[in-house]
Image 1 (cartoon, one colour):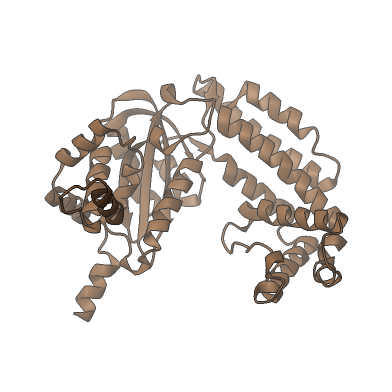
Image 2 (cartoon, rainbow, N blue to C red; image 1 turned 135 degrees about the vertical axis):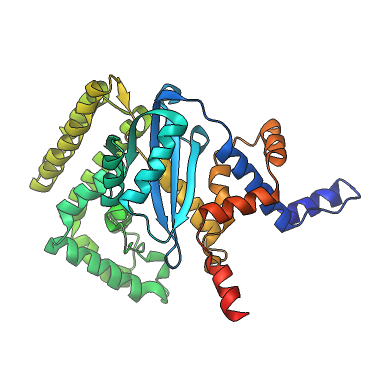
Amino acid sequence: MSGIFELLCVYSTLNINPPSQSSGRVWIRKIGYYCLYKPKPKANDWILIFDESIGIGQETLLVIFGIRASEIDFTRPLKIQDMKPIIVKSSKKWTGEAISKELDICKEMLGGILYATTDASSTLKKALRLSNIDNVYDVTHAIAIILEKLYKDKPEFIEFTKQMGTTRIKLFNSKHAHLIPPSQRSKSRYLNIDILAKWCVKVLAAFKQNELTQHEKELLQWVEDKRSFIEEMMHIINTIEELSILLKHNGLSTKTKKKCYKILKNCQKSSRQSQFNVLFREYLKTNTLRIKKWSRQVILCSSDVIESTFGKFKNELSKNPMSGITDLALMIPAFTSNFNHEEIKKGMEFCTCKDIKRWSDENLCESLSRKRKTVFN
């Protein structure tokens, strides 16, 4: 950021000292603090999206976003700017009881909470149960669980992933590195099956179009040998993409449920596809029961917005991972800002550096960088 200002000063012939990188970070913190403490209207139609993110060491960051049901645009997926930041807080360990206390603070602050959309981990479910808040299971994580049931411990899939790993190692430092398969996640492995399947489809297409050398064909022959398994997997992935786009854009309703059933009709050519069909219908049935309960025509069934937010935050942390979770966590509520002139002005004037320091002391654990200074100094 400071480099950009320096260039602007040079090309605009401005005779001023450009702000430093640390100044830019202070501005982000101020805007984040403003977004976090900006008054939210009390209403009876709030929906929460929240999760905890693991950092380095024992630090875990809890982030709670909120949005009013009346403000959701069910013609597109949620954007981070649609959300209101409610809680940003770290702890050495978040238990169901501890998160429940934060949810009770949200209730007091916002008024009525219709439901929460989460990945339904055991800790989050317990917290919601203790706070008497209903939960809608995020469709992305629901699909990942279904895929795990379809493929986990299945010999054909185990052999498939083993071949993927072996091929990746073999090609990594070779002249055939351009053919290298994608890496596999150690965590949430079933969320990136689509990446693996799509790479295989490209390999199969290269075989069909005779675009590989003889040696390359020998290296990737195992993909051709698993053609039927890969084509079946790809059919399920294509079905998932259709379902996900529909539900993430338009929410879950009686209307979208019927459209999902129509899509699922084309996914029953094999026993595995039929199993996926049955399991996803169960997800739809369980969650649409709540539409009548809450007197809602459409419900929000995706928490992707908080997953992408954590992704942005972790990307920033990766520049200096040993610092741990510091007051730079205020960049998370800053993401929700639309960064127009008026909001930036209010953010700059809303708080001081002392306010940010006080917030950090009250809401964050002792950071790794502070612990390191204490020990090594």
